[in-house]
Image (tube, one colour):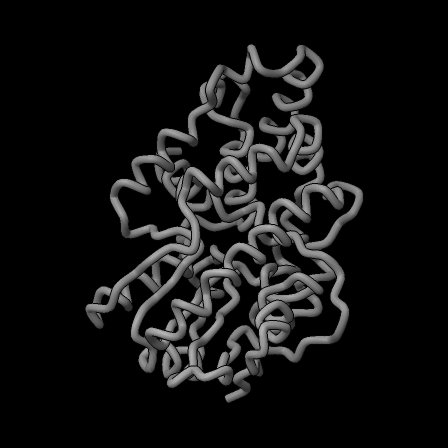
Length: 285
């Protein structure tokens, strides 16, 4: 339980960022994209992660290792190497009030049923957590393994070996506020209820094939993800990131590792950077 909870906390601020909108044009099958042009002295790279994966499925291609080794700094959605950020994450993982007070009796009954079915736990055991933490906990369980690897942690470890800086595009607090406002309690309960291990398996298979299109199709579910939610957790954040990325890339070659769901769509990072005048192309080998 303690090990699973630790994994859930690491996954806490990332799980909701995989859902994506439909694309305006087809993307090639590649998790790695090179950003050049518009006066950049050196190329930067954009890598789409699944955030978390079982050890047996984990991979890091040679093309990705080469791009990472050619980069001067690592940017993640959140800087997981910053102790202050991690402390903030642990604090925010706890609910502002117990779930037994936050939810209606009907919602508590539903949550208890979901928990017992998916984790074997009861509402009483997670009463002090936020619903988003519970969502991440169940998502962790859906992978069906305990030997988990986090791409953000792996990249951070590689950055430490090379002694290069690790930074974040946003703070834990900012991301938490976005996620908290993106979903109603009923929407989170629906996500919890409809989450299946089969969906996770399909997502992992698509990820291993670097099939961005398939990942989008699997991750998009308009029945549980409203247009408002997608705008908050994807579009607005992508727009904010692309505002600061040019200045960052002008100074150094950057390796950006963000959730794969942020790559595609009209307001995806790839398209937004292209609209800004950059050349963004897939790295195929």
